[in-house]
Image (tube, rainbow, N blue to C red; front, top):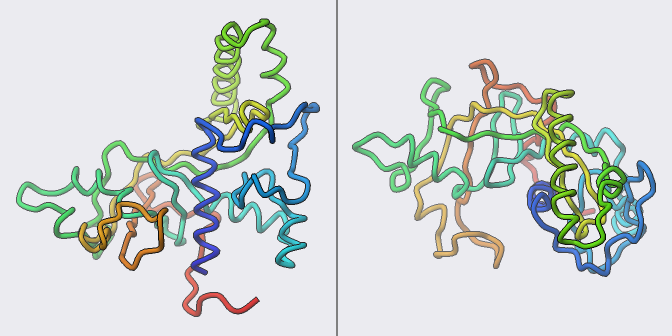
Length: 268
């Protein structure tokens, strides 16, 4: 379960990061895009690493390497259970809206909701009942509803001869797409650029603006060893934070969430 969970969170984190930049070398970007094509990866290419977007899973590679062939229902389950905060990746992990993330991702909320005589960064915080959960000012969580390739529309709008002249054209058409999407779907819409502009996709999110702090350990426990984040090497600490998403002042019931496995993964 641990390996599967972190793979899912890595995918969600990659999706968020791709909104502003791409780590794929320019030489790997597709040369052309056909209308409506999703451009799924063909086979495994080492320069891509092992993180993929939700609309382009490396099914052939998974099957060949791991004997793993997920169906569309599994892929949809992972996509909608993997949600993003404004500052971090996260996941729905319960039927009553619990959101699991890292402790440092809830630090600002812990500071904001600390009473005058207590610092939850130092003491930690746990809500024993729903009533004790603390509303996090300004925080939200986005559930990825769908992805649509809009590369052809963006590329068609770039009629200028130089990159400098194309930049405002690109910004204008992306703004139009996001505005139209939000008006039609009543969702939060964002155009994401991948592969240095090789692909443009509009991501549609359902946003939940009522997030409440349920649990945050004290800072020395969450960052034991002094390393702020866990990208350098695995750590033995409690870098975890729990929020709860509310909808209409009631705990949100997600359609999909990642279930806890008491037994953990098995060989194979």
